[in-house]
Length: 327
Image: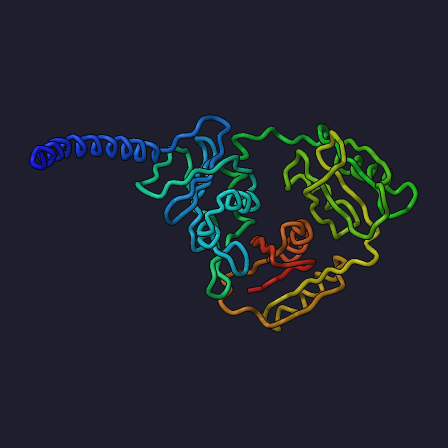
């Protein structure tokens, strides 16, 4: 009886091997088949690979993001991925790219082939021994390779601006609204904000940052923070909340050689920013650059324009300050 059972086991072994081989072949087929990526219209996917992320926009643009890049002072893309909290990875990358990705997929084996019109590495720069994403160049790249192919032309006469007065000065919202209307030809609604406050805010509903900057450049206020969460019901493309800006705690640190610091400081103070400090230039900086928290983008942009700096890095470790390094 024992001998018969042994023979029976031997008879089943080849069948088991064949079944496992078939299953493995099917799994490998679908794995490698899935690595040839072609997206349909309006699909925007973050691909999490072995050594890189890929932000893929329809069949038009794929942006490669190496794991070695820093997303803030201490955390690299690799650190982010190693946490295996992929929803958080998607959220962090969406905070960097101009166009939001809608989902993610993880591909850890095989070659990733992307069927898109344009493939680019995400722009980067070195500060010391760290590689950072150059966010200003990311926006320029999207404008050239993606926005111009997809966006509707933003005509000033079609833009509606909500101007909300939070500085307590009677009639100020209408005054600013008329300034926007006469200088840019945009429509506006004027009203008082629910409370008075020092801080000025801007809410971007359906407008590019470039067009929003055109509006804010016309206004006398200079401390606009981007407000991302808003309960204000409106059809306006952009909401501008005007604060008094009387007691704003905001600092601008300028790093550079002594020969350039005085001129840079004078230009920044001419804009109306008074809390300015200077220090020696950071070692290992490749070019002049401005670091900023994402909510302070428009403050950083105003300073960058005045100093003729085109490169900007989002660094959300900063709070109520921007860092300006002059090469």
